Image (cartoon, rainbow, N blue to C red):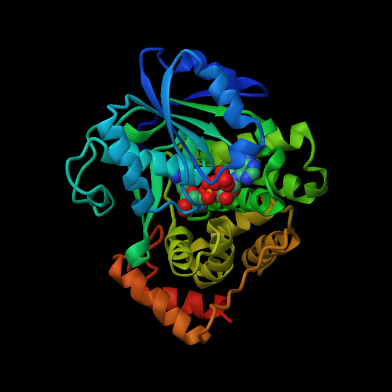
Length: 382
Ligand code: NZQ
Ligand code: ZN
């Protein structure tokens, strides 16, 4: 086990915490508030932000779409450059926060922001960001990753940089009250898969990472079972904190990580606008069955410790079935039919995109080649 770990994002957790931004953003900073399609105008979040920034100078940029596009975000980049913005306040879900990270990094680059996504420009500076989270799912509020789409070419790519990690994240569970059921379910599933990507690999005797990952998985199982109780302060707070801890760097420190489900899932979102979490539920069960031998020991551990399954020869497979049943219980599909084409044509399309994006050796052993991905997609597409 060898790693360095820091999570420098200051967390303001709890009801009424939006007011904390008055102090968290230096008074002399010129702020750009970035948000999405307007949900924050209907749940009082926008008003709370305006109230908190009474003494600040600020501008706003709205219209960041789910699965944010470079095409939209480049307009915000131009504003940050022209208006000499010194602080970006992202108010929204993963899409708004990721989009703000791209804007923050691209604003310090003289060329096309997409260079960052292609690895042609290494980020060495960014406008500082703060986040007000409105949808617990991605962990983007306190991590250094972002996933951006170029609509013109249907490329959905990610970048990581410590420079874009938010300085602070406000997590007030009350803001979740207006979330549609679909988005709450997405949050549960996305957080679940984030934990799996860092846990379901092979045993390394990392007791802290395994034990904490298992605790978080058990939380999500309980929250899923208690989904009917979701209009409840404790339910909301527990989902918000669990989803944050699932991808804040801690459980992934010093252990092997997979991320193949995410890389393949991103292609489904880019091609057919499948919600991010739902793309994962489609890919993951088939991927786990494909990788059964390599992941057997960890699947068995998860089966016993998370699902309380009794040991047996086929425990690893039963664990995958239990994961799939968890998605089905939440009414999340684990199979996919692409519109207007056969399953075979759809598989070909994804394979083509994976190849273009260099996703030809995925997973903790780089063992998921295009051939394996083809097998996985063939199982998942109908
Ligand atoms: O745009 P608005 O009007 O705000 O509506 C949003 C959007 O339509 C709505 N919403 C958010 N908070 C709400 C609300 N509606 C009512 N009340 C509220 N309180 O929800 C819709 C979806 O929002 P979005 O931000 O797209 O969802 P999510 O948080 O699931 O983010 C998904 C994006 O994050 C990326 C995904 O690829 C995808 O692009 N990811 C980012 C990661 C990271 N940075 O670490 C990791 C993840 O694996 C993921 O890939
Ligand atoms: Zn995810």
